[in-house]
Image (tube, rainbow, N blue to C red; front, side, top):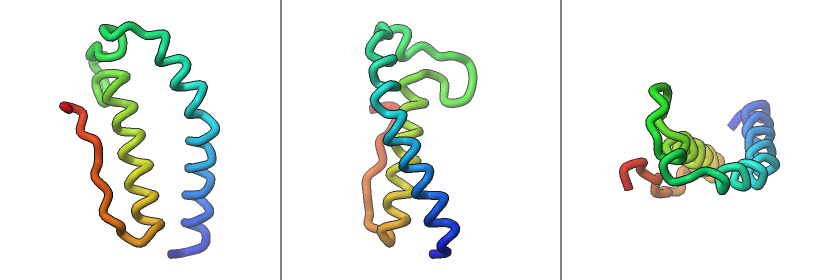
Length: 77
């Protein structure tokens, strides 16, 4: 893998780790209805946006590790 690509992925993962705790603390303040409400854009709900973020991170970690098969999380579960 190109060094520049690894550097970009490293920055992405560092950002995700730095933002995870404040994001989860903010999400804890939401009611179930707020968390799952269809917002009418993008991934529909905050829940589905978070699932998308986790799946994206899983994809890149899998890619960096050389294609270790990792199960994704599905928004309908």
